[in-house]
Each structure stands twice: as structure tokens, then as C-alpha cells.
Image (tube, rainbow, N blue to C red; front, side, top):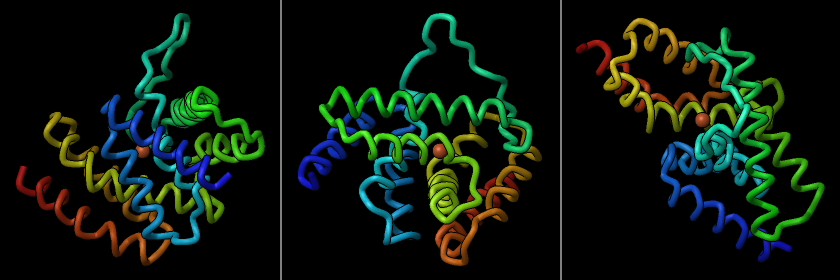
Length: 186
Ligand SMILES: [Fe+2]
């Protein structure tokens, strides 16, 4: 079972790298999860690396993406849709790769569907790892894309403030300071 699951994890990592849509962000979320929460098992690691995987798949016929402002408080509908869709595509890939442990599939799907919610230890560490990876891999890109600077500053400040532990804050701080420095120079 353990060897089999390690094999599935490698296949998922390979899929993410090959698709190359937010690959760095997703894979580093798995890395940061293990840094802030060494107790994380393979199930949590898989959920972390697949948490945004729906972005690798174009909209299906009849599917519509809810509006997204980039401010989490206003994006409840989008975040629920995004979490659910990532959970569904992760299940699809797991089954394609021959994985069929129903309990584990349910656990992974739940972690992914709830990855933006926080409020329990597991959800908090998933969200923290996602945020650290965002500061590390995406934040500067948001600035370069020409997004509204003050909106971005508010988003980054809120994202840093909600990190749930001193350890997560310590790890995020160099990346956070760097992007705030870039914003200040704009
Ligand atoms: Fe993410």
C-alpha cells in the first residue's frame, strides 16, 4: 500500500510538471506543508500538490466559472467551485492511475474541497502552505501582470495576517517582505 501510494504520488507530480499550469505553486505547497507540519502524511501531501489542479483542465461543455475578484471574502462562490472542481479532477487522476482506496480518495477530496476554508488544524496548515507558496511563486507575477497595486497590497497583508502559526509566518516573511518591497517601489 505504501509503495503503491508513493508511485501514485510520483505520477501526480509528473502530471503537474508536464501540464505546467501553476506547477511550481502546487508542488511547493506540498513542500511547505511538510515544513510547517512534519506530521503531514502522504494523503495530505497529495491533497496539497493537487489543491489547484482544476486549473490544468479547460472548462467542460456547459460549465461556467463563477466570478473571481481575488479577494477571498468576496469570492466564496468561486472558491467553493474551485475546491470542488480540483477535488473531482484529483479523483479522476487517482482512478486513472489505478488507485482505488475509497477512504483515502474521500479524505483527499475533502482536504482539497476545503483548502481555502481554514478552521481546523488540517485546513489551517493546507491554507498556510498555499499562502507561503503564493508569496514565493505567484505574488511577484501578480504585480507584473499589472493588477491594481493597492488591491494587491490588501490581499498580501490579509493573506500574511491570517497565517495560523508563528512557524508559517517565519517561513513566509522573507517572501512577503520581498513582494511588499517590490510594491513599494512601483
Ligand atoms: Fe493555491
